[in-house]
Length: 401
Image (cartoon, rainbow, N blue to C red; front, top):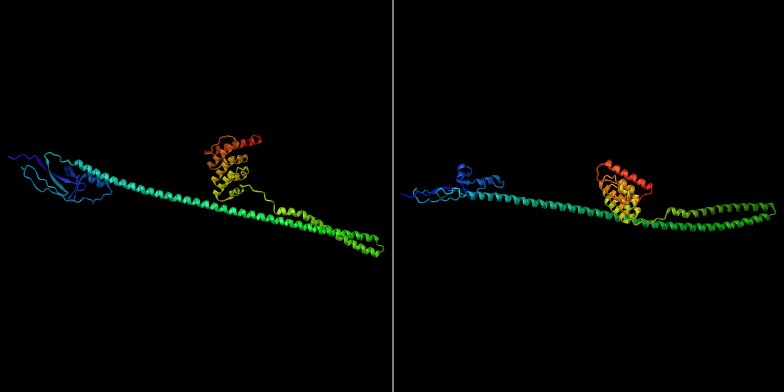
């Protein structure tokens, strides 16, 4: 009697992709797919369906293996035949683990999915680094453009300043030359007037002597013919004397008027303060030049510059120039700027209103409420009216700071 057979023959199918065993239950239920002569496990089938990077034709090479022998019913053990990929046989104890390799199959599928996720993550990281590099290059290009624009503006401002300096020097040379020419002309007029006056005075004295001699001879004349002749000569001398006297008067009048005329043509130029060139730059069409001029006038510390800064505060087209003027007027400490600062509380930009309010409090030592950031125009106008009324009473009552 043969010994009972304690082993059974089990045919295992291995996945053509992960080379893991495929449970018989997946084969029976159809969850494991058979593609031509190759089997694909459930995990690899899901991974291929979910990953866009895999293609349907990327299957591992292998051939299907079939069972290669049969053992007799009383053989003590069964022979195992192994094929290259499709199916392999091995002897397992009866009732043994037909699904022994199910865990390893799931682990391989997880490794594949993790590998795909890692590839996606690496691709995303590479794209992020590339995008970051592009952003950095764009920022660097914008920064270079801004720097170049700033340099160009500085160069233009320096060139304009040089032209203005050259024009001012040329004007000063022209004024000096005009003054010299005016002085020479005045000296020439005075010299000519002096010479003309001396000659006329000499001629006048000679005529007076002649007239006196004629009068004496006229008085001594005895005959009528001699008297008539002397009378004619005396009348001619009187006429010439009258003409010379008129010329002398006209010459003296011209001599007195000549210095005044010269003074009108070339009046003495008052000495300009050192900040005067900066005040002239307030007329520049370049807002940066006007802003720089406001700063220079403020640095002078001279209250006389208030007259130049008030029109800038109330009428300049650039908000930054008006803002600078509001701040500088407060630093100069002149009450002449109070009315303009009160008016500037109504500026369309809140930054200008804020700086005007700070300067106003600094000058007047008064802390009337005003919200420069408020959007309520009517409320701001009421506050401005309160400042105006207070300032009017303070000036009339002599209680200004």
